[in-house]
Every structure is written in C-alpha cells, then in structure tokens.
Length: 344
Image (cartoon, helix red, strand yellow):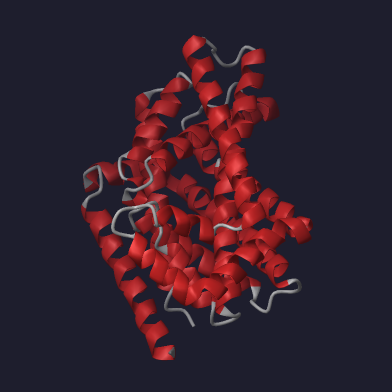
C-alpha cells in the first residue's frame, strides 16, 4: 500500500514537471520580450511573488479550519504540512487541464497518510467547495464595490454594464443556492447521480456505488455536518478564503503603482487603486473560471486582464504587462509546489 502511494506521488511529480516544461516552451511572448518585462518589474517582482506566501497561508488556515471542524477537534496534521499540501495542490491545479483537477486527488492521497481516507476525502471536497464558494462571494461583493464607485463618479454605468452586472448577480445567487443544497445533503452522491445520466458512464457509476456505497454515505454525512454542527469552522474558513482573494489583489496594486497609477497618491488614492485592483482580479478570475478547462487558463487569463484593465480606461499594454508578470509568478509558485512534493 505504501509503495502504491509512492508510485502515485511520483506520477503526480512527473506530470507536474512535464507541465512546467511545456508552459515554459509555449510561453506567449519571446524570451527577449519576457526579459524586458521582468527588468521593468525590477524589485517590484519580490512583493508580487512574495504576497502569495501569505495568500497560501490564508488558504492553508482555511483548510485547517475545515479539517478540525470535520474531525470535531484539533487536527493531528501540522499547519506546515497543510501549508505544503496547499501550495502543491494549487501547483497541480494550475498545471493540469480539465478545470484544475490534479490537486484534489493528490491532497486526498497525502492527507490520508495522517487521517482516515473518508475524513481526508471529505475534508478535501469541503475545502474545494469552500474555495469556489469564496470565489462567488468575491465576485458578488465586487459588484457592490463597482456600484459604490459609480455612485462617487469614479466608474461609468450604462445599459450594457448594468445588464452584465445583473447577470453576474443572478449567477452568484444561483451558485449560493446550489452550494446550500450541497452543504445540506452532501455532494458525492449528487455528482454520481449526474454522472450516471451520461451515456457510457451509467454502468461504471452503478458499480462504483455498489462497491463504495457505505464510504460515500459517510463522506456525504461529513460534508453535510460541517455547516450544521460547526458553524464557527465553516464561517471562519469562508472568511479566510475571501480575505485571500482580497490579499491576492495586492499583486495587481503593486503593478499599477509600478506604472505610476495611484489616483493622485496619498492614502485615499492608494485605497482607490486597491479597489480598482480588486475589480480587475474579480473580472479576470470570473472570466478564467468560466473557461477553466485549459491548463493555467492559457490565453484566457491574459485576455481577462487586458479586458478588465481596458474597462477601467487604462492601456492594453498595461494589461499585457500585468498578465505576463502574473504568469511568471504562477510558474515560480508551480515550480515551488512541484519541488515541495519531494520534501519529506
């Protein structure tokens, strides 16, 4: 059994390394242009990359809160192990296609070395659900940030923009409803039910259910119990995940400041620029997640940054710069995450 897990670990490692090589060889710009952008970033690259040390820290705290709530007590897994698995899991998610599904199986594999497999599975599923739920809250709150900036005359509004904002609000409200159902009734059995309706998967789904029905029921019960029995862990995790999105926006703030965009300077100007950064990240992540089946959302994230920055009246060149530096930051953290897989 230990050898089987080690072989799977090696497989994840090889996939991650191969993905990094492919990304470097298929970068959207020439190495000369890339070097020019890196030179332009200069020392600002340190806080741009470094802020993710704290973003991943908030993610790890959110996951730790879920594990403790799921187990009903203090987690036997150390924070630094959770932190390491958080970085590696996201590295695999960024590097693999199909909506970034590489990180979750790896997290289950590694976490099951510390706790039983059912709790490991439910904790990983719960954290993935929380991660996406926080995305929707981030997008939802960003709508009201935009409207507040409209009210003070900082942002434009017209019929098209109002329609788009309305669609996003409806989209988020629908997601909140679906998440509430998942937290009340569990998720695994519901997903298996959906898979059973896909031609060619019905027979496999029924066999899987027959072999693992008890484990699936236990996992779904653990998923449903977190919100009902340990609301403190639930809302603590949600708040930490939401704050990680807000902190993530700092990297865009740093790049705007690098270009001298500070809305007049001073505390008020920088805070306004920070709100603009939140809107840029919100639109870009929404755009990227809608088309999330590409590894690292190749091309999608770049387009999202260019469109969102242009919508604020800034140059497309700035959007390209932001997207390239963010891509470099992702590759750096992917390499860190893949290397951490071999850290004992």
